[in-house]
Length: 333
Ligand code: NAI
Image 1 (cartoon, helix red, strand yellow):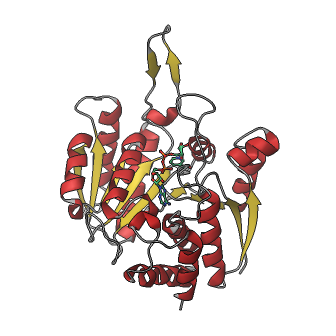
Image 2 (cartoon, helix red, strand yellow; image 1 turned 90 degrees about the vertical axis):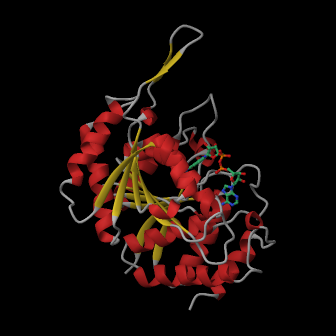
Image 3 (tube, protein in one colour; image 1 turned 90 degrees about the horizontal axis):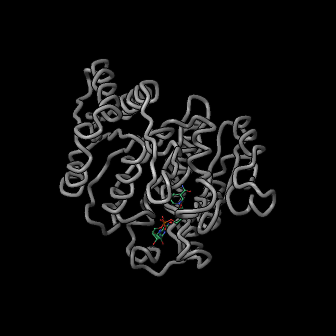
């Protein structure tokens, strides 16, 4: 079978890590027609729009895309195209697995959890305005529909992956209406899944618990902003942003992308760690049913990382992105 997949390199290190991912996926022999498309800075240059309508149409048509990170100007300029693409395609579940790899020196080497982040509302609704010159307001939106579907997604994922516990993160002691609704929805959905344990933890306490005892967590479900922050925190526990893959899932469409950003400080130097992008590719292969190729890549990664001389710069090694990619391909069996 030949799969039709939209491929977006993105900005900064996106080009490097996505090229590595494509090379490795192709080395497994899986057949994919890549529809190479532009989003972010490339799309601004070619059509003066970082998220062309044509791209949205293509993804709706092909249903699957893989993308590199794209730049969002800080404190000014255009709004995030990442937030926009998730909303336009209703990719409501952002799945971010955090798993230790043997051979990767990190704060912890025995973590295996998944963060399920609500991807379409919360404080990312993008509704902000100035109140006079010296005050600004942002609107946080929490709806029953989005809260129920993300909590249900977390429980279904727990069941599918044979996981034992879902932890819902909130700040309902202070945001009694918004986070209060999210928590109430989670508690109601939990009653349908008596085979899975459920707990809720306030976000500030959660940060401490995640740093001190990350092994006690299994599936974490959170509103948009908390999920975003927790996933970078959790990536820091297993070796950094080079090891955090992600998937944006809707009812019919899925867009896979690493958790990290464009890393402008190392752009174009051929030193980025492509593992997050490669693992996002592995998630994509599983999603399209190419489990054999997915397993082969994951095993090749494990073999490569076990060897102490096979490390990229972020792990204190001296392999370039290209050399690391070639080693993984060599380790494919
Ligand atoms: P970042 O994730 O790009 O970088 C943070 C730090 O981690 C930097 O020191 C960087 O060198 C390092 N890093 C990140 N990925 C790495 C990798 N694969 N290998 C080795 N080191 C890596 O976050 P930052 O600097 O806050 O954001 C830069 C830009 O990326 C911004 O425009 C931001 O909006 C955008 N961004 C885009 C995302 C997306 O497209 N999904 C997600 C996060 C940020």
